[in-house]
Image 1 (cartoon, rainbow, N blue to C red):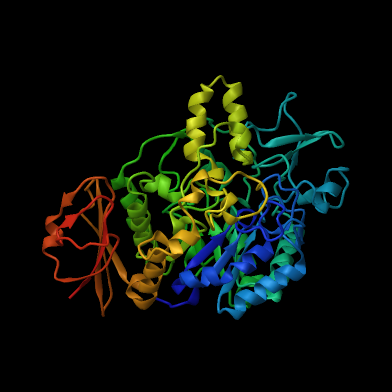
Image 2: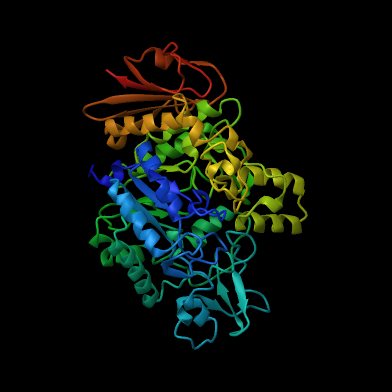
Length: 550
């Protein structure tokens, strides 16, 4: 196992718009992040990933970039960014930025020129097709609802956008586009940035036949039409050769459509492409044929198998990213834990899981507090373009909108985007004015200030688990094996190397359980998420135990 700083690090993800507002305009900003760097360092996190801060009209909250070399006015200035980067490095931490290279904003200079004329020198920076019998070129569905083709009056044809119509897809077939992207990456690396999370990087190579798809299974469309295109590895290898390999940095690619069988093609260290990917097998586990707004129940046995299969697949020459939530999904506690009676216990259990598996762990802002989903009363309080577009599509299809609102309560990306809850004061201490999106009303009970004062809080447990992981490299690099794979309530696994062996026991249910396996453990209970100890063989609801085996 090749040891690297990015394997041993713990990543803290920031959604800047919702993290901390320093100038009371209701929007989080770079100065707000600077104010809270000591808090992040106190968690033990040593890598900070910030979502896009480039200039953007914010159709998709910064994932529609209009200028890759400048900072969004709402977030601050380039001087603020330089101050942020220096402040992070001064604290011994590193900064990971977000690269959006599958598409630009339609307000980017390249697209503004491309749409004017079929003879524009920027025409081939994007994909253009004529319609078929008065209809768009294909029936492809957008990730955000509706179709993927938008008509352009000036040139009397359509451009491709896998996301919103204000996010036209870049044409990586054009070597000039690839050169532009590599130069952008180099610009930020030369500033001192320590790596990139690469947005939907698995989509950059297109299948140029542009054929219609079977609309019955959305997941299959992503995997077989949008992702893993014929030149994807050529592009990533070129990017690595031209830029990435020239710096001591880390890369993690967001990988919709990447699966077990092709994962090593992206992350095998001998292929020189990416360090790791975010796969979505566990994040799509409750998605029905219609996608995330068509949820279905899932079983813990399936959840466990996903983690076990991915560990097995990547253990020889690859590396995994361990995450349970981010800005694109519901709060991990509400989704995989119990955000009611056992909120504190299950938040701590999920922290135990996150920080004891093999791979680089990612903590999303607020999860270290046990922040939960929000249930806004109506669609008017939601801001996420995916949620709003899906609402329109459901409404036009005659859905029961009362029921659909409950689906949004569970599945909307806005669940993870409500303001960070710093104090019990108005708006949770995020801002002195009304935020860009309403705060979760439970900020009065769930916030940093109250948990700092409580030694038994979720926050203090996260600090404990991060410290424990860093003190025990076996939990970073050691082997992994899942035990009792078919148990519907328990996730129990071993981590070991030549020097140490650990057993991690998680009761992911509301039941009190007696576990024979644990009565036979010869070892010391070193970490637990209940304050009072009990017998080794007993697991209380949502109880987590970490044993050092002797």
